[in-house]
Image (cartoon, rainbow, N blue to C red; front, side, top):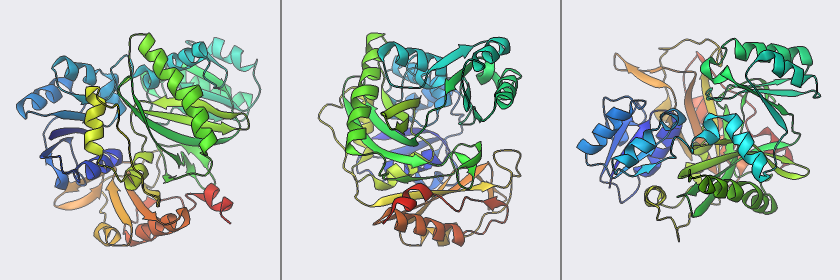
Length: 424
């Protein structure tokens, strides 16, 4: 099978790493690749955000399946363009991608069908938004409606902080994503991420993970794209799984079918596990990053045929097998992230880290300059590890971090602290 993988971050490196192991793959093309991905396939000189270039390349290379990693090409309608050209695509249509590209769309849909979630309001101007805030109680959750790379959420502890968050969003802090603002009630509980594959009819459940979105120790500071992750998570019990499927996933996918926008691809439910059961925080229309990386480390099945079945409507009868081992990930980020940071700093020790037991390093933001591997983003390296227990996986991941020489980087030292606190 000839595959074209779109995207070049840590999530895509993990997907490419897993896909390249498939006995069914004959050629892997990359758009746009990167230092981590390039050894796995052939990088094409095309932009993943250019639908015309993707369709043209897929035709010229006789591609059997296009796998879209990031959300931005999906928001632009890449999956629609590929399907119009009779090229199988793993990823939802532009209409179905609204589950992530518009928080307001998602909230309205879920309210109509009774999916448990926080109460909310949608606003196009700051005056109305601030009036709504005065009807609620602290803490306040203020969200940019559109795509903001995982950073468009501000949890304000006081009313003045919430007012400031509203002003920031309407002033363009998150670009066009903040043209509309969603304000939600704060939910108390513990977050978890759960994933399913669906071809629009059949649903194949995957597994749950937990990530650390805040930049600081103890889950403090501003939101990021994610500073670490682990799987499994004890908070996602069998009962929580059953409630999530029956009350959240299945009703949503039925509603999308009924509205003429059947969902095809991976659906990621960000959940708050409350005393009243799981409630939906958000949907993402692609694999989470960094959760994808730990999920790929635990997946025993061949991923490629299942992705192809998802894209071609033949998922019925498929299932996935998972390792009993745990997986953990620590993000090495550039000093200053999620604010301003330097690029172009040399990265050393990755081969040493990869040689450690259970460790695999995925590249999230790297480049080659003058034959030297350098940093090229905010989140730069994903150090993953597996182990018989979550504690062992986390310990091995930090051993991998210690092997890497990069003075300009930092990581959180407490990844997995919640689950470790529960350990006997």
